[in-house]
Length: 161
Image (cartoon, rainbow, N blue to C red; front, side):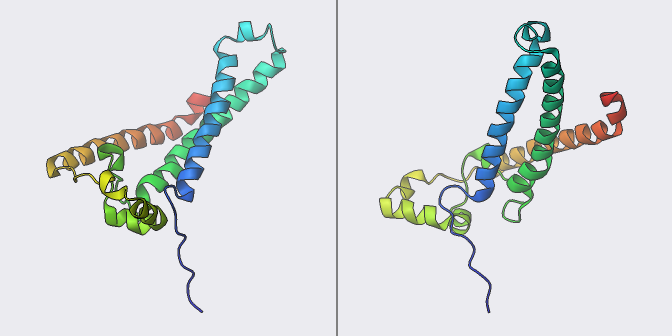
């Protein structure tokens, strides 16, 4: 009895699809409730007062869920998987190592090779100095986000009350 073969992904893996749909859902909920809460006096001409109260709570809960998704799920998917650790530089350079793509998305690479489009998509690796700038910027943003996250927990009683 052996281990099952890993799934053979085409262009998008399940983690990217999950991330996309979570953001799409969050934008719809936050945008819809935010439009009502933007001007509650005008909104009260069209909906009852209790709807605005419920909208406020839905907006708050979805905002917390969105933050949790970004800090936990998206961060893990994008940066903390062993293939990407400590940081996925694709967000800066726009390119990914071909061997990494062959490992993560073999069906996509095979399809591109069969169609003869793979060579046209290859780009050069960014220079070392540019990659170092990416890392410095990325870790600076990470430190800033962790600072905000920790302080939001430490000051939660003031934020809620």
